[in-house]
Picture 1 (cartoon, one colour):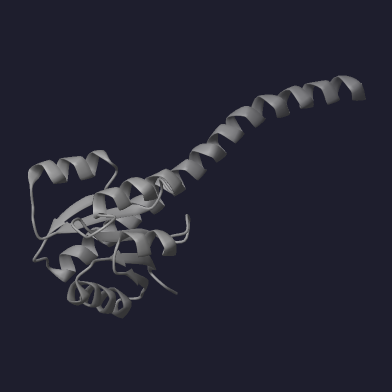
Picture 2 (tube, one colour; picture 1 turned 180 degrees about the horizontal axis):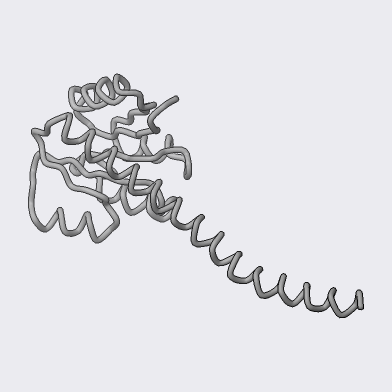
Length: 157
């Protein structure tokens, strides 16, 4: 069973290849793109658990990619990586919905932990929504069943 599906977007072949090899090696299904335009063509809502994208790329950069993906899939986790860390960029990325902001050079185990943590948080949130839904259903159903029991009790007398 695959650990999840990741879209890796980076204009640098070495970074893309390292991320792809590492995440494939630990059980993820990885799709790569050389830029934002290619990533948008490969991205289908609901098919990826996580997008890891470089911030600065020609054409559609990481921030624009984040915005466009957020318009079609608000659930996908988005991690920004950059070799040019600036606080403003980090703040803007988080405001636009990025889950995390990672600076180059990065440690592969650190990125793997962040991705795994993000996916686990998302799974937990999904599970909690289901539990809340079931709880709400039971809260509504109990009075209905009691009323139905009372009505049936009167009819059988």
